[in-house]
Amino acid sequence: MALTYLPTELLETIITHTLPEGFESLAFTCRRICLIFKPLTHDHNTLCSRFHNFAYAELTSDASNIIRTAFDVIARIAVEPIVARYIRHADFALDSRRGRPRWLLADLHCGGAVHRLLADSPYLRQAGLDWQESYARIEEGLEAVPYSQHAVSFLVTLLPNVDTLILPQKWKHLDGTNELINAIVRRTNEAYSPEDRPQQDNPFLALPQMRSFRGTSCEAMGDDGHMNNPSNNPERGFGKTLIEVDFAACCLDDVAITDFLHHTTHLRTLRYSHLTKAYSGPQDWNICKIITAIERKVGTHLEQLSISIRELRGSITLGSTSMRGFQRLRVLEFPLEIAAATGCRAAIIPNVPLVVRDSSTDEHYDLVHDEPFISDFVPASVSQLSVLSSGTNDQAKGLNVMFRHFAATKASTLPALEEIQLSCPDNATVTYKDPCTRLLAETVKTGVVLRLSRCPADSIIIWNEYQGSCQFLWPPR
Image (tube, rainbow, N blue to C red; front, side, top):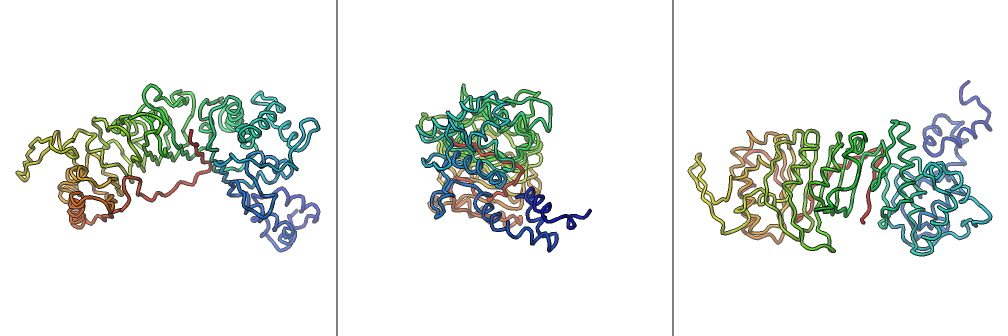
């Protein structure tokens, strides 16, 4: 029997089950169904507008839409369950403000909508958590801080369609909340694999549809370099589905990077910006080991790589590295400090002379070690290159060394290169601007586009963000 021949009452029942995912698709199939949908359109559009891209809101004329905490969302879902299905992008970063709809708050001793939501939760049961104790922990957190990580973790269990999740800035590792998130992971993985994959620090990363990860202010250096995830366990599939990773304002060493990337066999984009933490003393950073670790783990399949320095209190450790092991890299961004890190100290450190002769031109150069031509740092597959610099006199030496004889060697060493973005801040020294001008002439000869950016050492590439089926953004600690 054709759908349109069904009684109106039955069609209305079917239609309620299409909200919100199939609303538009079914509504426009024919005139009769469209007319049945019409009374629901206003409410559907209102819920889409408020909850599709969800963030906490205070300034609104509608008191029912004042949602400041995860408990507010839970309470709204308790009395209007369809709301949970509308949330596709959830930004819980600012979950830290007092204010709940007290008229929705259930009494612990008389039951209510919120109680039923917790009591019926399969995730609480699977985690071995008592729903009344969980509710009491939520209440305790809201009254004291006001912030309840237990409320946030329970809310996550209610969102079947969420694609992007930003955890609260106050999120930290708690046994109770980790157990609940691990229950989500186990329940989700049952549809993909019989393995049981509980995680300790970053349980969300074990979800089988996780595509994108953004970690802000993560720190793992020295003796604490391991990130305490189970990626080094060959029986677990941690990171296999990740396609994009962004470490923003982080302080990681090569051990932490190696741990994280251990099973990321499909990773295409990796961004890392380094920031020495304010509460720690000066810390030296070995950028060469970072690059080597990345190349060993994902060099065969990575397509976009950005390494930048937001703030470094300490020194760049001398070492050696090469990016020739990156086989498919198309977009590359790195700081000019890499010239010093690879042993070419004369590139940016004055008064350390060593004469080296170029046999092809009989010219002599002042270097400490072998000259690091740009081909040492840029794989032949790269088409877009970004070099970050603050424009100092010392960095001008590195720029000279890195791009020396660019026009003569470009065709044989960098055949795919089409564009160079180079930092040239307004306050750059004249000594730094001179090699920028010379490089412009070199690129004109080769047909490469050179863009001089006024941005300093921060990233200047406009990235094409990956829109995956599930993204996860880790908060500051």
